[in-house]
Amino acid sequence: MHLVIIGNGITGVTAAITARRLAPEARITLVAAESAHHYSRPALMYLYMGHLRYADMKPYEDWFWAENRLELVHAEATGVDTAARTVQLATGPALAYDRLLLATGSVVRTPDWPGQQLAGVQGFIGLPDVETMARDTRDITHAVVVGGGLIGVELAEMLHSRGIHVTWLVRESRYWQSVLPPEESAMLEAHFKKYHIDLQKNTELRELRGDAQGRVQSVVTTTGQALPAEWVGLATGVMPNLTLAQAAGLDTDRGILVNELLETSAPGVYAAGDCAQHRQPALGEVAVEQLWYTGRMQGETVAHTICGQPTPYQRGEWFNSAKFFNLEYQTYGRVPARPEAGIASFCWQHPNGQHLLRLNFREADQAVTGVNALGLRQRQDVWERWLREKTPIGSVLAQLAAANFDPEFARQHEAAIRREFGRQFPTIEVTRPRRKGLFGLVR
View 1 (tube, rainbow, N blue to C red):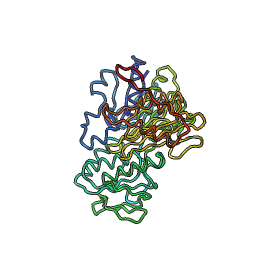
View 2: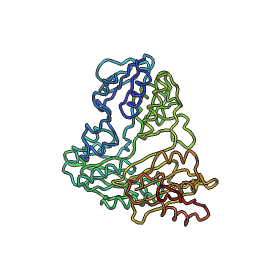
View 3: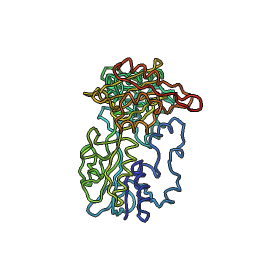
View 4: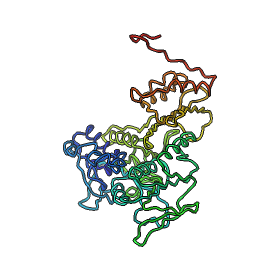
């Protein structure tokens, strides 16, 4: 079997490594135009900030690929003939395949603003974007970031690290309001202010203006402001990269449509990761999953199917994490921005504005349904077990220390959290955890 994988991100590489383990004799070829080797996309901002070198971003040494007989083709895939089972390349002969995996990832979504073509205006998604940004932000003093979410905050932190004044335009009335409840948004907005980030809400980009050399010089907002902008970062979201799939005649919608085995509409062709869209997502799950860990899971799952072990994709409990400057964020389960019917939500915040814990649970049986944590590290395995077993909120609070993943000598907040829960929900019993005394005896 010759397996050709287009894309060397986390999905494509995980699929290749898994397939090598399952099919030792298979020929496996990875095709990618962006870079010769796989690198960690979450680490891109730290490359710009000087915390990492490019070599540090490679999860695998350069010898790894030849050692595991994984062929690397550094070229752009320009077409797929599903009838002839070939992949056309911009340079070099076509590749014949027995099985094909499209792991083409995402591309930047950008509205068509006047002046968008000016030099110094760009999105941020891959290694070439970091290189362009490093070149175009050298010796500048003012930059504008357009759009909230996680890419927006990454760009703001990157620019701030170089002493560049950042004006951040967010069209919503609060930060990341489609994802976060109001208390989390307010806490993060106050946190950004500490770093002198000029966050302007209810404000959108209307026009970009340039100088005589064709470089961006300022932006005009929907509120009528004209802001200095020597560089503009577009953090307006991403969308699945469908160029190859559509040219090949595959069924697409927002993404490449796949079934539970991650099979596309063409025999022998699969899609996984950011570019894939589940035809029938499970109840409460999204059709397009654009997260690092779901890309890894899909890559591993599809490799089993490709290698003759049909395995339906099952994501499990929802999880995400991020870092807002130095404030860590984790979420498990379902914590929507707006309360759902039949779901109670408890929120505790420390007075210093650096710690927050939100617990959602069903009113009917008190089973915990989700958690948000800001400034409190939580253990993923513990929360996955509590959510899977539908653990009652009272039991979760009694055992809350078991989920604490903060450093050993960090201040503990479980007692304060339980006191606040008792104040907000006085009718729900919280069994106090038993304490261990001398020699580990329970008392």
